Structure formats: structure tokens, C-alpha cells
Image (cartoon, rainbow, N blue to C red; front, side):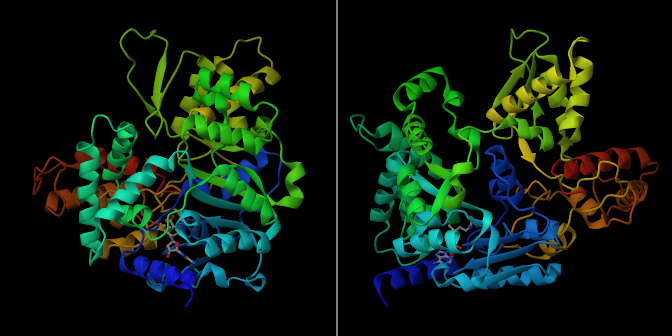
Length: 534
Ligand SMILES: C[S@@+](CC[C@H](N)C(=O)[O-])C[C@H]1O[C@@H](n2cnc3c(N)ncnc32)[C@H](O)[C@@H]1O
């Protein structure tokens, strides 16, 4: 065994010992990658029949939602950890999915014969593997990517990781000699306490280290073990990654969140100074300058074959939104004291506030909110905005207005967009699970699963675990109408099988129809808004 083999074996053992929780990452969804490519002027293969490869797929939780929703597509996952692959295979078998194949093997053993793929996803792997595996990842992205395919590779970046590097070094120092993962973890956490509370006031890195340590404190144990205590963790500058990709015959297309690479989204000072220093430089160089300004820690880069590099647009072409479908999960937020009465306030899933007095903007947002999780077409948004526009506004002007609002939502990290519709049916009468979830939730009733539950937007969403929701979940089967669910719930409340959420028993109480109706409505709204139901 050479040194790389030793490290690869150590990694495999580590992931067997403490398996990674495997779930859906929305920014890796082939539909999202295709939509981002469209923004930069590139066509990418239709997702319905796409061949998708994920490298370092763990138990396949990021492939399952895609495979279940696209029976005509083919998903292949590769991971070194035989244990994770086996547990994923057992779930796929129990779910009866025929279009997903998980293989226990090293990325380094993939050759051209492994086949061609329209989308290659490598999330959370590149920075945690030795150089030979990093080279293999880029080689596979070149050799096994279809000519018009898109690869997604995420990795830790400098300068944001500089402080985290010191925290990692300190944790590894303190966990030296630990015999078990638990001991290693406990000692690493002791070091975190010192970094949070025991740093000298004169330490020039004090605030950066404290912040990095505080962030880590919030992470789950498995994440701390793999993200920060793993044998390999090699962040790099974006330019270094872009150069390695170019060396492998690939070109940088865009970040999976294009808005994160626009200086104007970080305030006026950043935009002006960034422009002063980097205007006229190649796109990769400008993005590297921006990484210094924002202290970026993590990147999610999309790559294509270098032969297509000339076709990439310098900036996203928002007119393609006219052919897309949209979703936005915005919650209404209270207006702060003193806000104009006409101003409407919203909060994004990441907690960012959005405020507007613009009536067409508010109409677009309200239409998206009402439709969620169903995706609205551009034509649907025009219809929603029309009644709020001036009577003299032409259709072309309205189109520009709605495009501007979509860009505003995109820049606020509030917009999800796809070139294809998603398959939610706002007219559905009988509640029905989205593909794959009926089987997955049944399995989850009896076991802790190594893969997460999901919705058609490729979000990782957890099923509610309260008694009432569990009862409703058990009875959703695509055949039972809402009225019958209500009767079942009423009877369950009256028999004492289910207690009222307040804890009050309704056993033998009569006339529970209205109570059942309210409770069922709440439970169904919860399941619908998470996107579990078609
Ligand atoms: C940090 S986990 C990320 C898992 C998953 N992609 C995610 O983001 O949740 C890294 C994964 O890469 C796998 N891995 C590491 N080296 C590998 C190699 N040489 N070949 C295949 N898989 C590898 C590990 O077993 C582990 O499941």
C-alpha cells in the first residue's frame, strides 16, 4: 500500500464507523444545474431521461429523490464505504426503485468504460480526499461527462477557511491519541470551549476564531467528525480549483448560486471597490477578488467541457426566466415599528428579510406563496401582476417588470427556478405522496434511516413526528379522500387512539367532526407546505 492507499483506507474505515447522514441538497438537483446553465446561455440534457452520477454518494440520499421522481432517468452512485452503500441498497430495494444503482468502489477506479453521464455531482468530497482522489474526480468529470453535460463540484475555500484551519489544527492537537471516535469528539469539543472562552484579549485572530468555534458548536457530531477531524481537509483558493479544472480539460461555468458571485449583492462599498480592482479581468479572477471581499468558505462550482467555454455568457441572461417555472418559500413577517403602512414584509428560509411597497412585486410574491410547493410559470406570474400594474402598462413593460422582480428575489436568495415543471398538482383531490415517499416514510416508521426525506424541489425536509401527524401520515395512500381522512381522525380521537395536540383526551366525546376538520386541516397544510404531497 502506498501513502494514498493508506489514507483512502482510513477514510473508508472512518465513514464505515460513523456513517454520513445522506440527504438531498437542492443546489445539486439536475433540474437546478440545468436551469443555471440556461442562465449562462448553455443547453443541458433534459432531466426526465438524464444519466446522473454521484461521486461520494454515501447511502444515496441525494440521488433517491431524483430517481424516484424521474423513472425514465438513471442514477448511479459511487462510494468507498461499503457499509453506507449496503444500507442505501437495502432502502432502494425496499422502495422498489429500479433506476438507481449504488456501487462500493473508489472514484480512482472509475474508467472511461464506466459510461457517460449527463450530470455528475460531487458534493462535500473534493476537500476531504487526498490529491490522487481529487485528480480522479476532475478526470471523471472530464472522461465520463457527456459532451453537453454539467458537473457540480463543491469544496472548502480560502480565505474563509483560514480561521477554521486553525480551529481544526487545535482540535486535532487535543484529540491526539484518542482511542475511539467518541473520545476524539469529546476532546475536540473541549478545545472548542477553550477557543470560545479562553482566548487572550490580545490574540489578533480572537474574533475570527471565536466565531468559527461557535459555528462548529452548533454542528452535529457526525459533521464535526467528518468535516473537521477527518484525516484530509484541504481547502483551496477558487483560482486554484479553476486552474486544476482547466488542466483536466474542463471550464468553469458558474456557481450553483449565481447570485452569490455578484458583487452588487454585498453592498455598495464591496461593489465599487471590487469593480475598481477587478474590472476587465477574466471572470474567474473577478470571482476570486470577490471571495477576498466576502471571506468565502465554500464553493459549489459547475464545470463543463472546455470545448464549450466560448459559449458561456459573461453575466446571466435573465430573459430565459420567461421560459421557466418558479417557487419561493417566503413567510410573511411583521412590519417593524415606523414602517410605511403599504410596506409588506417577508422572510426567506435562510432568515433574510425582504420589504417592498411595490404592488406588482407583492403580487408576484403572493402568487408564489400561494402556489407553493407548486411551481408557477412566467405566464402565471404575469397574470398575477397584471391587476396591480398601471392600466397603461403594455405587455412588454409588464414582462420587464416581472423579470426585474424575479431578479430581486434571486438576489435575495429567495427564488427557486427550473426549466421544467415539477409535478405538483394543485387540483389533486385525494392526498397522495410524491414519488418514493410512501415507501420511504413507511420504512422510517420502524427504523432510523441513513437517508433523509425530501420534496420535489430536492429539499431535505423532515416528516413531522407528533402523534396526530403520524396518524394522518399512516392513512395517506392516494386512495383516501380528505373527507374520509377526517372521519378516520374523528373516530381515532373519539376512541382515544389519538389525543388532542393540547394533551386533552377526547375519548368518548361526541360531535368531534369540527375538531377533526380543524386538526386535519392543520396537519395537511403542514405536509403540503413541506412539499410531501403531490
Ligand atoms: C463528507 S462525505 C459526503 C457525502 C455526501 N456527498 C454528502 O455531501 O452528504 C464524503 C463521502 O465521500 C466518500 N469517499 C471518500 N473517498 C472516496 C473515494 N476515494 N471514492 C469514493 N468515495 C469516497 C466517503 O465514504 C463519504 O461517504
